[in-house]
Length: 93
Image 1 (tube, one colour):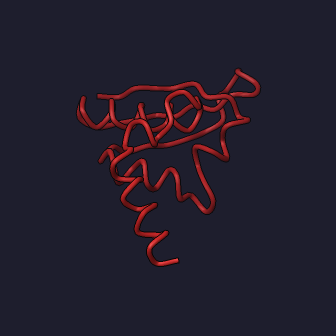
Image 2: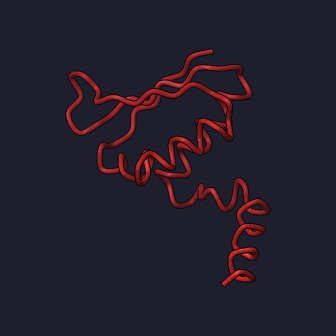
């Protein structure tokens, strides 16, 4: 399955992350293959191409959307996982 998402370039940093950390996480968590490039003929937007099984693509889309839309935050999608990490961080700190 292949899906394309159009994302405003203003969210590129959020989707890609520092040194590619966000997009690497999305790839690992979903199992999908993801490529990002500027949209041709559509100024101010980038295209996110997602390849994988239907489940992998759906998971990747949700995680990309979480980077773009605050109401779909990763904490809502994967709250237990991030909550555990946060509590572990606080314990170590």
